[in-house]
Length: 406
Image (cartoon, rainbow, N blue to C red):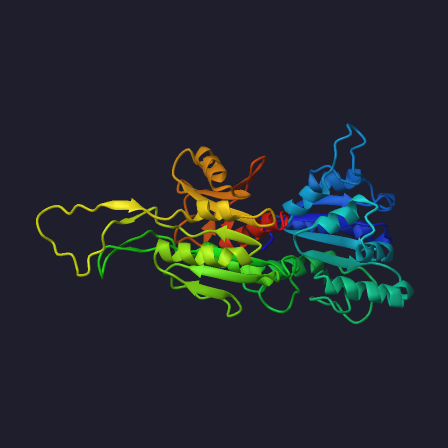
């Protein structure tokens, strides 16, 4: 379940820091990529050289590298990670995290984190039982963090040992449980509500442009990517308006779904709904052309050839790009067959989007009808290339990028 996952491991100044080595080994054994961020106090208990040897990555401790002055970006770490684990987490760090005291690299990374955060407290029993510590733990739970500890962790190892850091293998099992299929939508975990109070508009699926009462021009889009985006936004606390072309998929009842068939119907619905939204994600595979005339009866086969005259459809993305205010965001998709990045950048500029999600038909097992996708996110000044993964996880990557702009 952790194959290919990117984990930021935060280590604070606890005697339990030696367990972090075992945790790193377990994570890497499961296929995860680990980046360590350690506090100055944490370095007193375990050396960065040891940690770096295990992760094969430089350990991050300060805002600037002491060797060459390179700036370590906590924002980039927050976008890179699929999860952050802080183990061990001292009472002092709990207090800083609760109150936003960003006086070291670990806390600033935590405050910038877009992925779920798992916290394994480590302290003596009296410190653990103190009302201030319990208040901080309750507050952090309310913020959507996952507290893993022996007494009440998801995989508790008994009633004894309050305040003791949970064993590394149980922390890894908790991560696997979180990322396992179907479990992230249950109430066993509190999802970070980073879209609370936001309204997100999403278009999904194909459009059908009628030729006659029984035939149409369409494409192979299943709508899976757009529906995955809608569900992820809903879990993060957003109000979601989903404008769906003709697909067989179902969605959560809390999503406001508007079913359409043609490009014109999708255009009208999108233009109508966008002014009340904070962002739009135009994921639908909209037809670029439609028949100039629609026959009111089934077209009969007469002769050897049939000539159709096609005219352009409404350009939904270009219209929304012109409507967009300074406070609104726009994400568009580009499915390309050749010169992918070149074509995507041209579309990004034409549509006035904040970023574009590029995928290619040359990547086998992705795009139409597939459960997986492989994307590149391109904005005006940067590009991020992602591995092939399930569309639910791709949706998370896309929404992480959007959240960073809202």
